[in-house]
Amino acid sequence: MAAANALTGASVSRGGSASMSGSATALCPRSVVAAAPTSRTSSLRPVSCGVVGTAAPVVATAEGDDGRRFEQLAVPPELVDELVEEALVWCSQHGLVVGDKNHPRSGKAPGVGLLHAPFALLPMSFPKVYWEQALELAPLFNELVHRVSLDGDFLQQTLARTKEVDPFTRRLLDIHSKMMELNKKEDIQLGLTRSDYMVDGATDKLLQVELNTISTSSNGLACGVSELHRNLIRHHERELGLDPASVVGNTAITQHAEALATAWAEYNNQSAVVLVVVQAEERYMYDQYWITVALREMYGVTTIRKTMAEIEAEGDLRPDGTLVINGRPVAVVYFRAGYSPADYPSEAEWRARLLIERSSAIKCPSIAHHLVGTKKIQQELAKEKVLERFLDNKSDIENVRKCFAGLWSLENDNIVNSAIESPELFVLKPQREGGGNNIYGDNLRETLIRLRKDGSNEIAAYILMQRIFPPASPSYLVREGTFVRDNVVSEFGIFGAYLRNKDKVIINDQCGYLLRTKAASLNEGGVVAGYAFLNSIFLT
Image (cartoon, rainbow, N blue to C red):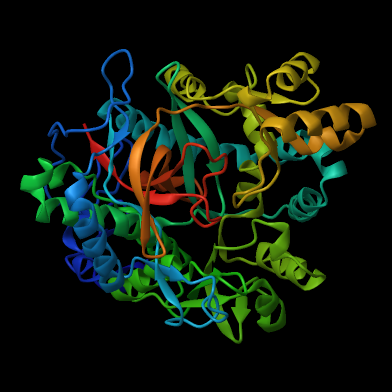
C-alpha cells in the first residue's frame, strides 16, 4: 500500500479506501459534494454538507393513487426569462458545458466551440421511497455484476445465439474466450456502473430500464446540474417557495474519482497512470475531464487520454504483463469508449482491446464485466431461478427481482404476437449501447413481422421489453440558449462503484445519480445522444 499512502489530499482509512479531504471543495462547489443517503453496505462515506429537507413545493400535478408525486417543479411565468438567463451564465462560469456540434473542432480541441449542456430549468419532485429503494439496490447490482462476470460459461452460453448474428457481440465474446483459454485472472476488479430506472405510472413500481457496465457517462454533468438547481432556488427561495436543501447533492465525481484512485493505489506502482480510453471526436469531453481533474487535484494521480487506435500504435506489454503507453506504465484502464461498433472501425482497435485485456492493468470494465451489461444477459437474469445462481440471500433476490420489467426473447411466440398486436406496449432492443438504437411503435411491428417472415436467426440479436410509462408533467427545457415549455417524463440512474482485490471487497457503494428528462412525445432519452436534458432530484 505504498502508493495508497502517497494519495495527495486523501487519507487512508482502516478499510484501505481513500477518504476525501477538504480539497474536494476546491474542485466542486460545496453542495455538489453534499451527501446523498449512503447505502448500508458501503465502507465509504462522501462528504456531508447539510440535510436533505422535505419542503412541499407548489407543482403541476402528476400524482399516484397514494399521493406520491412525480413532476417538474412549477416556475412562475414572470420569472422564467430571469431564471433562464441566470442559469446560462452559471453554466458558462461553472463548466456545465459541452462541445457545439456546429463547430468543426469542438469535439477535438478543448476550449473550442463551447456550449452549455441541455438542462431542465428546475428539478423534478421525487418521492423519497423510490430514491431509497434505488440506493438499496445499488450494492446488490454491483455484486451481481461481479458474480455473473466470473461465470464465463454462463456468459458464453447465454450469448451463443446472439454471437451468430451480431458481429460486434461475437468479437467481444472472442476476446472473452481467449482470456478463458489463457485462464486469465483479474485479481483486482473495478466496476463503475449505472442502473437506470423509471417509475411506471400505472403500477407505481420502480422498474429497471437497463444496467450499464461500460462508459457510464454524464457523471460530471450530473453533479453540475444539481448545483445549478440548488443555486437558482437559493437565489429565488421566496418567489419559488422552495427549500434549496431538498435538491439532492450529487457525489458522482468525487466517489468515482475515489474509486479510480483507490484502484490505482491497489495496483501499487506510483509511477503508473490511469489510461482514459476515448473516442477520436468527443463533444462531451468536459464531462470526462471532471473525473481526470479530480484524480489529479484530489489524489495526485496522472491520467492520459488515448483512442483505441492510439493505444494500438503506442502500446505494448512488458514480460510481466504491464501495459505501457509510450513507455508509461498503466495501472487502470478507464473506458469512456469501446461500447459501440463505431469505436472499432478497423482491426487496429480490436488489437488494442485484446492488448488491454491481456495486460495486468485494472480494467474498468474488464471484457467480462462489459458483457454482463448486454441486453441479452439482462433478459436472462430476469428468468425464473437465474438470480438464485448468483445471489444467496432470499431478501436480496426478491428486492432485485421486483424491479425487473417484463423481458423476453423473441423465441416466445405469444409475446411476439402480443407485441405485433400492441406495439405501443413494448420496446425492441438490440445489443447496443449509447442511445438511439431501440425500436418502437410501427417500426417495432414491421421489424417483428419481417423477422418472423424471414425465419432468420437474426431474432437472437434482439430482446423485447415491457414499455414503461412514467408520469408526465410540464417543464421548461433549455438547449442552445433557448427554452421551450413541454410535457416531459424522466428516467433516473444510480451510479455504482465496486472494487475488489481477490477476496477483499474494498468498495461496494452507490455513487450519486443521473436524472434525464425528455419530451413525453419522444421515445429515446439519452443526453449524449441528443434526446434528453439534464435534471436533478428534489426529494419529497
